[in-house]
Amino acid sequence: MDVIVIETTQLGDRSYLVHDGSVALVIDPQRDTDRVEAAARDAGVTITHVAETHIHNDYLTGGLALARAHGASYLVNAADPVHFERQPITDGQTVRVGALTVKAVATPGHTHTHLSFIVDDGGQQAVFSGGSLLYGSVGRTDLVAAEDTLGLTHDQYASVHRLAGEAAPEAALFPTHGFGSFCSSGPASGAGSSTIGEQLASNHALTDPDEDHFVQELIANLTAHPSYYAHMGVTNAAGPGPADLAVPASLDAAELMRRLEAGEWVVDLRRRVAFASSHLKGSVSFGYGNSFSTYLGWVMPWGEQLTLVGSRDDVENAIRDLSRIGIESPDAAVGTDPHALAPRAAVASFPCVGWEAVPTGASGRDAVLDVRRADEYAESRVAGAVNFPLHELLLRLAELPAGKLWVHCTSGYRAGIAASLLQRAGRDVVLIDAKFDDAEAAGIPLTTSAAASS
Image (cartoon, one colour):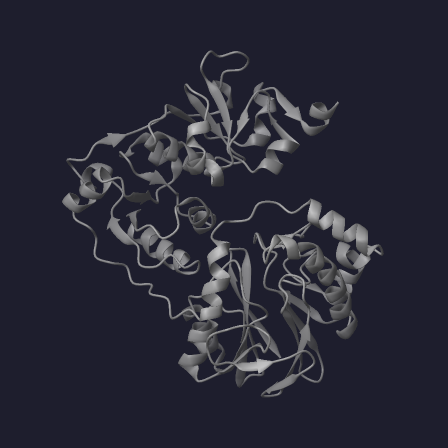
């Protein structure tokens, strides 16, 4: 048995191609299936089976399109209310994939109908745990419905204990989530690989003997998750079609200018410092990188037409990333010089500074705006800063304090997005392009949770 990992760092997920040298099973493929097909070609194997561990909440699956393209059996839990043909599979059922035996194990918790798969070649085992058992923790349990979270968390505890009991300690563990995905919860480790035995010794879901304690602790530490998750499960149950990854013809200057003047969403993919120094007035900054699709999908109004502005490579990569979360067919204006893209359009800028330039103490009408999540703000914050999490910003513009806003986050990425949104809304902004961890050393007074509660 050989396991090929197809990593999607942008969403913190992994898909897997598992083969015996001749035929292959694909587990939890992302929407852009060309990467899986390339891996299969390189390995010289035929895709005969595709399997889903669950109806995903954080991305659109490529499973149905991949199975149809290859005439493969599509293994989906018989209990999942899907609207397409599949090969239904249930707890304890086994399927042969060439020399491999694939056993389904019911592991509810991340979803009600979650399955894990134990693959055995007669000599070694591999466990594909989806959003159940992760490296160091488990998948979050609050994505189905608020009223189901308590029960699903109890289910998650029981499921990982059952899964660890059914697999050999030396079995390699291959989760789908847990590599930066918001589908993971608790103290997920940064490990790149692990075994069932290692998790038995270190994973808090397996080492905590008190189920109630585990449940309370996990729920207490669940943080905000991207709003676009609400659209993923419904679309996955309906069966997403193939992704369209083509780069559209670049918009001409007149049409780009019209869209800006009409207040449409024009997304600049350059890095935040370049955007701050000069950009098309009315555009917003989502610098292309690993966090791009997560925050764009979380912040932008769902269903709005987008126009991407940037280099051809960034536009091409952004289209691929957005297809994974169901943002289809954005338009594009290819180029990195705002003046060249739309010579007659207004150009804007805003200051970009380090912590040493941030005023401390009373500063008249200025305010320090912290756009990190509420849990991050509660743990430690700039004294006197106000918290408006980035994902809430567009909905709370009317609540912002008056005057100049000095905007920061953890690294600068979210602050760059926020500053662009605020300037678009007519506010006077300064981007603090610095790490929060460096604030105190720069003389910025901080308040911690302990100080706040004492």
